[in-house]
Image (cartoon, rainbow, N blue to C red; front, side):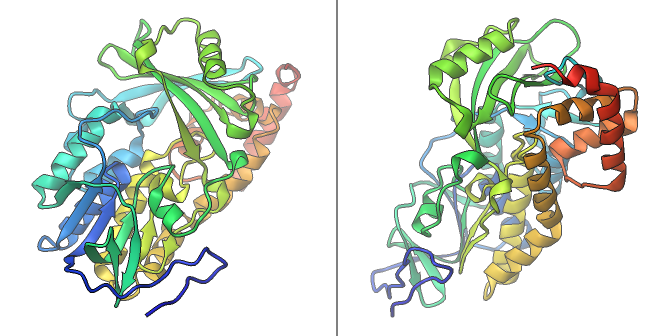
Amino acid sequence: MRGSLANGARRWRYWRVSAPISDWDLIVAGAGPAGTAAALEAKRLAPGARVLLLDSAAFPRDKPCGDGIGPHAAAELDALDAAAALDGYPPLWRLRLRAPGGIEVSGTTARPSWVVPRRVLDARLVAAAISAGVVFERERVRSLRQRDGSVVVNGALAARVVVGADGANSVVRRLLGARASPDRHTAIALRGYAPAPSGPPEQLIAWVAEGWPAYVWSFATGTGLANVGYGLLRSRLLGGRAELVQRLRSLLPGAEPDPASLRAHHLPFSSHRPLWGRDRVLLCGDAASMVNPLSGEGIYYALLSGRLAARAGLLAPDRPGPAYQAMLRAELGRHFRHAAVLARAIRWQPLASAALAAADGSPARFQHLVELGLGQVRITPALLASVAAGWRSARPAAAGP
């Protein structure tokens, strides 16, 4: 039996497989936050479900990332009964934001964040999944084939639904014939670990003119280290790794990251219309380009989309694709649309100064900025009015580089 996918995708052939097949209720490719969230949610919904989690890496393993766990991401971990993944890392309440024109605002967030190295976080989530009854195997996805209402992975593993959670360079996405996120909708960032600055632990995000729209960050873990980095649109990077290292060091002059910890990674933004998957293969997290284009935050959307993919796969196994689409639309549809609009607008540099000027002295507006970067983006009349007011007060500073 042979067929092809619609929507102009590269032909993905359906083959009737006759070799012995190992059957599962759900196969998850990728054991980062999106994949482990899918696996944990599946076992939470149906403790007897046969769930297979695949990843080519042995855990613990390093993963370049900003390591930030915002309030929404922490709530997702709690919903998955996996809040213990944050143990040993203190909650962080202070956030400082800076615009290129020199405007800076800081404050205490309404809910705390955490900074947990992905080497620790991911290993803990994999361990939690295994404890819940998920089977973990070290294996890389090489092929996908259709077989009478199921999907066969690597010719020997079959499930009614497969979740592709294998990151920005997703093999599952490529096997579906989907293109990678284009450079204009993809950031590249360099991350390292440095001794934390003196003083109370805080998170710093500083928008910078070099490579605009671009930013540097310093996220204290609360354990003596800070995750530091620099990121910009892939289309704006004229040099290579050396340029990223040079800019990180010059824009965060007090940070001295361990050279061995410096690693670059891509962030596929949701402004490039997130792809939910095709047929019985569901994509989530970075594999579906669900990174917030305003901040680079991805863990919250990875956890949420992984959880929704598992719900679609377990609760609607005959029509998982439409079910997953509906869930994404309900939970993140408006966020994706509004974030894409603001991502285009923020390329006009003075807008960043106006947004920060609006938040200066206004705790409510400060919290709104936090929500834009770490949670659900909403363009409201109040937001537009506050930015307009900020534009008027920031206009002299915004005339800078």
